[in-house]
Image (cartoon, rainbow, N blue to C red; front, side, top):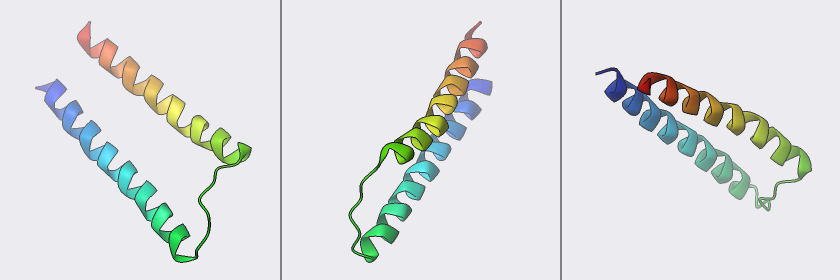
Amino acid sequence: MNESAFVIFSIVASIWVLMGIAGVIAILKTDDQKIKFGRTGLTIIVAIIVPMIITLTYATIKSRF
């Protein structure tokens, strides 16, 4: 039962992240700006995504054992 709640939460969280990304792209496209990521942008993206992946992996492994 606990795993099903975690899966549902993960799916909903993924959908929200994708909607946020789509929203930022839509805002940039309305101003006719090119979408490009510089070194700073990639650093910020990595700093946000890597801890999320590590945390979700840890929670998955911990729930298995």
